[in-house]
Length: 286
Ligand SMILES: O=C(O)CCC(=O)C(=O)O
Ligand SMILES: [Fe+2]
Image (cartoon, rainbow, N blue to C red):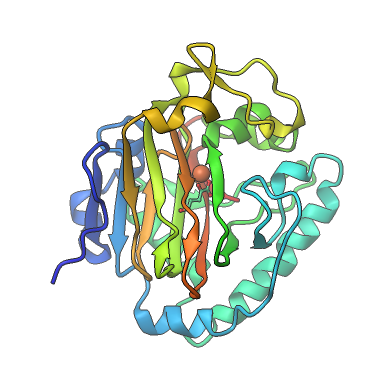
C-alpha cells in the first residue's frame, strides 16, 4: 500500500524517490525558492536499516533549555544563541560533526548523503557549509528529539534569518529571498508529531519587535497576534516516514510540529538550505 505523506493539497509537496530526483528536479532547490513547488518529500534518502542503526544509538534524555522550538532535546550547537560566543558554537559544531560521523558509521554517512542528494537538485551548483566569522564551519545539521507530550512551537524560518542576532553573519552570506528547511525523519511518532503547514505566509504578517531573537512570537496578522488566530487558517499535515527527507519553504510558510503521543520518540536530523548571495552556491547549515 502506498503511504500518503501529505493529507491535503494546500501546498504542493511532491513525493519522489531519491533515485528519480536528479531526472525530475535537477534544479529542485531553485524550484522551491521560486515557489514553482512548495517542497519535496524525498523517499529512500536512507534505508530503514541505516535509520534503525542510528536511532539505536540516540539514547540521551532531555530537556534542553531555551531551544527556539521549545524545551526539547537537541544534539548540536544552537546558532540563535551563538552571537556572544561564536568560538564556543564552532567548537561544538566540530564535536557534533564528529559525533554524527560516529553514529552513522557502518551505514551511509549523513553529511555525505545530504551533499549528494542536495547536489542532485542544485542545478549544478556546488553544495557547501558556510563559514562563520572566525573561518570555522557552521554546523551542517542538528538532531531534534521530541518525547511523548512534546511539540515544536509555531514559527517561520524567516524569524531566524531576519530577527535573530546570532544569524547576522550568516544572513549576509545567503540569498535572503528564500531559505528552505530540510529534515530527515529518523524515528516517526506513533501518533502526532506531524508537521503542520498553515495557509499563512510571512509576507502577510507584521513584526514590530525583533528583540529576543525573534522568539517572543509576537508577530501579527491584520493587527492580531498570530498565536491567537493561526488555527482559523487552513492547514496541511505532513508526516514523512523514517528514511524520508522533506525539504520545503520553511522560511515563508507558518508551521509547527504537533504534540507527540505514544511512547516512540520523534527524532529528526535537519537544518536549512539557501543559495549564496550571488546564487552560485548552495549553502546548508543549522
Ligand atoms: O521537525 C520538523 O518537521 C520541522 C522542523 C522545523 O520546522 C525547523 O527545523 O525549522
Ligand atoms: Fe521550521
